[in-house]
Image (cartoon, rainbow, N blue to C red; front, side, top):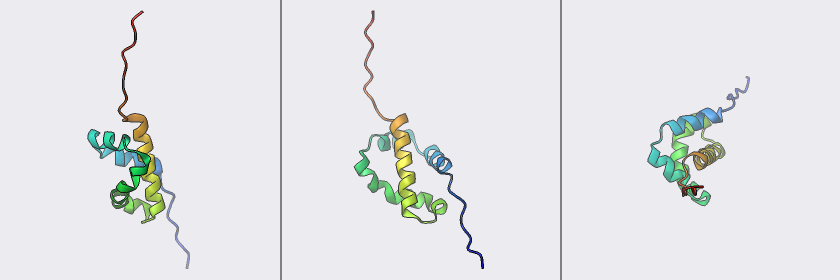
Length: 86
């Protein structure tokens, strides 16, 4: 009997799928979270990605961290200063 292995996960696709289903408000809330607060979101991500991650909690944490890192780059609230006129 052959042991069947699952194909490697396409993390970029999973992250893109998660982000496409999120509202702007959700994205900005997560983007502005402290990294220490991420475990509070773990359960929600585990439920969402369980079909893709084969219930592997480490994979869920990795996906959640990648989502957060992406949002840090794209949706973080920043103070915009007006440039001085010459």
